[in-house]
Image: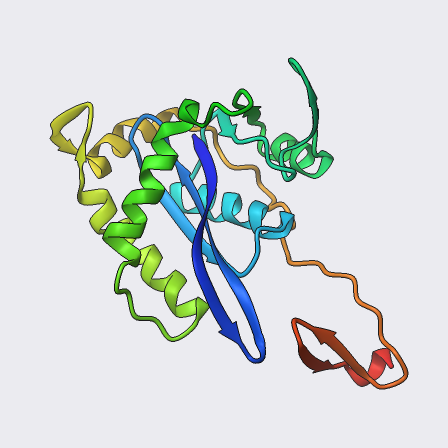
Length: 209
């Protein structure tokens, strides 16, 4: 499977202007795709995208190709790679191999890069949505519907959905327990019981004051 982020402009949330990021993962054989939008590209959103894809497919591939993102690689000297420990813990839980492509060789994961361009043109262009949840709900419908109806590049007599049906038995099975991928953000509370985040103030529950 091949994994990458795409940038899809910005959303206004209260007084804050947030980037709209799309986590995209493609199964290299069948071209089955999952896209999940978030307001950042932090590690929790990165891992959540993986978990959503694995749950939707009922399994996962044995190898995942990545760019040399900080979410994946902390340091690289030649072939020596120091992985992000959070990604290693996640990959160990699901028993797959994270594999960064060579530096400046994005063509090694061309399937997902082409899919991001296709998402821009076929799904996102002129798409109306009320909020992030609405956008992700429509993205799920698109992934299950139109994206699955596409002709499979290896044999145009088959659809992507049919190719995935052949591939599914070869996927790794999911572990019994889910990996925790909830959003985590450390904040400081001053004298007033409010937290400033993205130019917006949020009240602190009284039991924490």
